[in-house]
Image 1 (cartoon, one colour):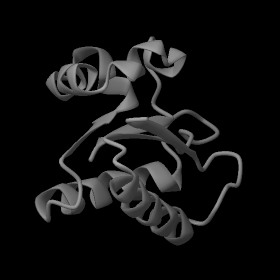
Image 2: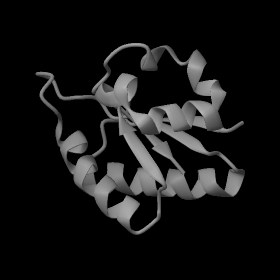
Image 3: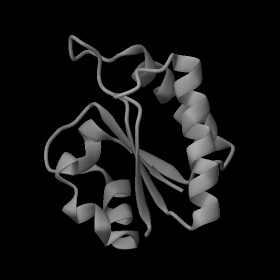
Image 4: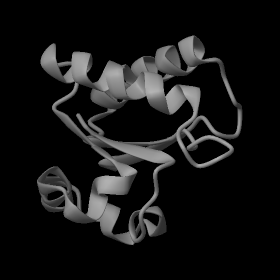
Length: 112
C-alpha cells in the first residue's frame, strides 16, 4: 500500500501533539514504504482554519526545506496543484479517495 490516512480530527489533539503525531506517522510510513500520507486535521469550526491547520502550514515549509517530506498539497489546492498531478502518477490509489474530489481545506496530502 502506497497511501495511508492519519485522522487527527477525531482525537482533537493539541497543536504540539498533532505535529508530533504527524512526524511519527511520517517516520512509520517511510519504514513501511508508504509514499503518500493524507492527514485529516479539520479546518476550524468557522471554516477559516483551526490552530492545527495554521501551525501545520508553517511546519510544512520547514519540513520540506529540510527534506523530511518531498512535497505537500493543501486540500483546497488539490484540483489545481502540479504536485497533486505528481502524486496521482506515483500513487494512483488517491484517485479513489472521495476527500479529493472537492475543495477540502480540512486535509493535507504529503508526498514522502
